[in-house]
Each structure stands twice: as structure tokens, then as C-alpha cells.
Image 1: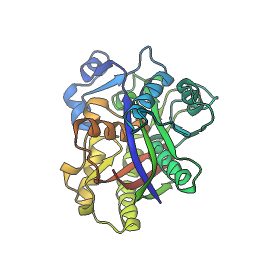
Image 2: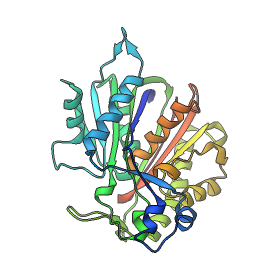
Image 3: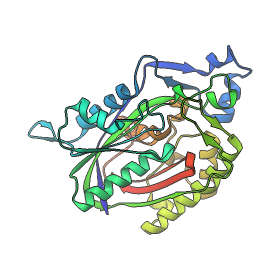
Length: 309
């Protein structure tokens, strides 16, 4: 299969919640949070709905994609990912399509928590290569503040809100993926309807540091590539200790692993497209580069993919 990245966009709520705010209500410190997580601040949606930020990211991704006769080239499919849906139905993708004024493209949601963007991108690749679509908009939007227990010191420091999106088409460069799900026998990360999220940090950490390197190795093996063939390793921004563990176990060059959690924490499925858009904007992401993206999260889902920009 092949896939081509045409445009990216992001929409982050303007409200910044710094570590210093937690010191006022919890037995913690900025130093403790940074040491354990690498996070210094995160964005929180105050008056913005999930659709507001999803739509903002979608519009920017479409604006940044190549034009046709000077106008935005229409997308013919919308795939949305979110672990923090505000509606049981309609799907977030349908809400986005309606708000964009689209009439005809098929719209659907993909639920894979923090692996959502990887799963959504993979679904897009299959539709594109099957000829079912020409341009797909993949939107990952999260409002984790709605599920976060801000009295729980262990979890409230980790999560943030935000949305990021990508427009993709069929390309001329190879695309490779490896998706999977490990059984969550400890029920270590979940959120029941109407309740706050619950996380057993040790279980999540054990899963992540075990599965993440294996997923990276599996997708590279499928693509017949080595770490030296990859320009960027764009990892889910869950926790700096997990990222450092993956770097250490695979002996990766840390300079090839961008970090965004210091300012945006962990907005679940939005972390990977957010990183992509930040890198596109500052010039680090260049045409012809080969990127490996890795997601992992509740379920316990995981997925890795390799594509050329």
C-alpha cells in the first residue's frame, strides 16, 4: 500500500494549565511532575466543545493541503478518533462533515484510544488503496479534562486537551503498518460512562515499555528497514520515562525522537498528529523523509506505521 501526507493542522485550547496550579491543591511540586513525566504544562478546554477543537484542526489541515484551481480540494471521507466523545451519536466524524459543509463523503469514527490516529490513518490507507476514496481527512480530537479527576495526583498531571488532523491521499511511496491489541487483564486504564478515568500506572507502564519496542521492531521488519533508515520516530507522548525506555531498548538516536509533551502533556490520540503539525510548521518535517509513528493506549491497543512525507 501507499499513502501521501498532504496537509496537517492543529487546534489547541488557549487556556494553559501549568504545573504550578497543581501545587495549590495537591501534595506535589513542579520539580516532581517534570521528573516523573517530563510535562511542564498542558492545554485545557474551558468553553470549547470537542467539536470546536476538532473542526479547528480539520479546517487547518484542509487549508494546508495542496489546492485545485486555487481552491481547497474536497475530501471524500472523514475519519475521526476520540476517547472523549461528548455524544453517544451522531459520530464525531459526521459532526465534522456537517460543520464543514460536506455533502456526500462517508464519515466514521475509529475508537482505539491513544492509538487512534494510527488506526484511523491505517483505515484511510486501505480505503485509498482500494479506490474507495481519493482524499481522506483524519481528525483526532480529545477533551480529557472532562474525564480527569483533579484530586488524583497520579493521573491529573498527565493529560491535556487538543485536536490535530491530517489530509492524506494515495501516494507513490510504500506504507507499512502493524496493529495489535494486548489483553488488559488488570483493567489498568478505563473510564466508565459518566465517571472519571481510572489508571493503574504500573500496569500501563509495564505494557507500554514491553509492547512499544516490539511494535517498532515488527513494523520495521515488515518494511525491511532498520532504525538508521528512519528520519523521525514520532511516538505517542504518554510519559517521558516511557519514551526514554523505548529509545534505550531500541538504541535510537534521541535527536530523531521529537518531544511535545513538555508543553501539551498527553491529549491521547491527538499527540501524534499534533507532533506532525508542529514539525511541519517549524520546518523539521521535510519532503522525502521517512517517519515511523507509534501509538499505544487503553484496551490495550498499539499500532505502528511507516510512511514517507
